[in-house]
Image (cartoon, rainbow, N blue to C red; front, side, top):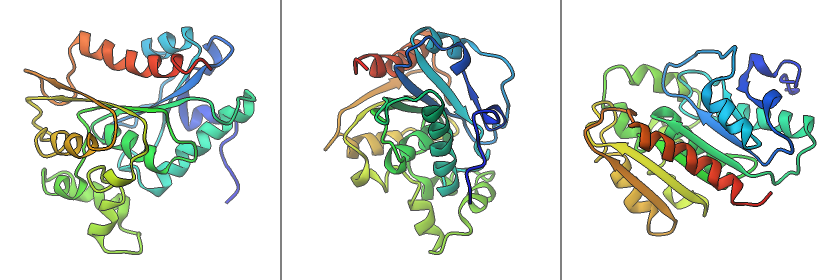
Length: 241
């Protein structure tokens, strides 16, 4: 299939702060949203303005809200980044950071494995890390996961493992990982997800792990939210590109 997304149609497919971004562009920050979120942004939000001032293009791909970073979601994100790189004539190794919360956190981690351009860092807030387990964790999840992976030419469990950070741990690239997880998370069990994944990942990779007390799912306090955003921008600014 020919590429459908052009720079002129980009905002039908993603939020981007590029029109207010300070030039030259230093890097690209990709933020993946959580399960079921389908909001389209008509105006620049605080994060978009903050990254723009630093010369960082900040994008939010409008992936299928039940995508779970399946093959189409990976390709869709690659295509959006390709459009921006072509339009602004950016060098092909422009620093990219993947980030997100909940399903978006899983998406950031999984995207790091499959992306055409491997991110230099990944920041994840309360990420889903064990997708086969998550299938059993809440009654609202099986329909979404079946929707994302039913067409894969393999068993369903095998399909889930293709987008499960715990099962992809050996394939995770040698980049920096910044993971936050709220200790009172009632939607994504911290012990079954981030705790397990971080223990595995630390055997080979640099991981900074923040266990956030007294907070439920993705509910970072202001200082932790600022730190999360700083990890993203500092990763790009530290490259000197």
